[in-house]
Each structure stands twice: as structure tokens, then as C-alpha cells.
Image: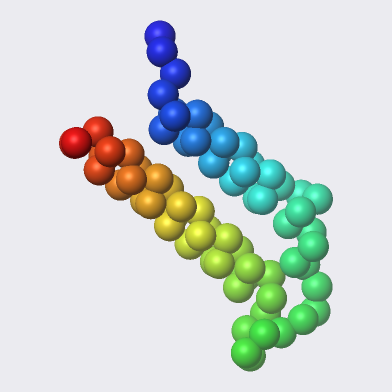
Length: 69
């Protein structure tokens, strides 16, 4: 089984998501702060999740463009 750069990047993105949504780093956002009238913790979760989806889409679309050439 050969290892492609896309596969390695997907594994790295999975590890990054696992770290970002784990207790020690997620506890950084837990507090009584408000940003633009929204509580910081749910806002941070939404931004992290949206960023993860965006990175995943960019990575997968980028690999399709390169393989088509």
C-alpha cells in the first residue's frame, strides 16, 4: 500500500481536529466571556468546526485538481 500526500494530510488534519476538540485545548474557550453578544464557547466551537470543514474541503478539492492533470 503506497502513501499519498493527500492521505498523509488527511491523517494530519484528523490529528489536529482530535487535539482541537479535546479537553485541555477546548477548556481554553470555556469561560464567561462574550463576543459580539454571543457566548465565547459555542462561538469558538462553531468557528473551529467550520474551519475544519473548510480545510477538509480545500484539501480534497485540491487533490482532485492535481490528479486530473
